[in-house]
Image 1: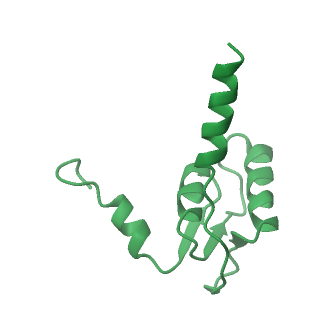
Image 2: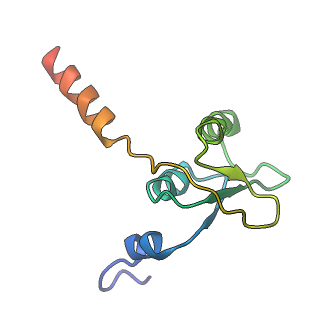
Length: 100
């Protein structure tokens, strides 16, 4: 996308059947989780990104929740409830404002 016209990213998320996402992007993994579609996380054999421990905890939590799987070379179909943390975040913001 060259920055002209409508960004196709949301349409790509909406139209995709499955995702293979690199383990270095919390944002890409999170955004794919709102779709409810299978997500396989590809983790290279060597670490080329910064805080691997933090990302690994994040991915481990999503695996435990059934939202993502580790990419094993094939695409596996599975189901999970789409993740949406927006209400939790909004509630936390309201609580923080109320304490002020």
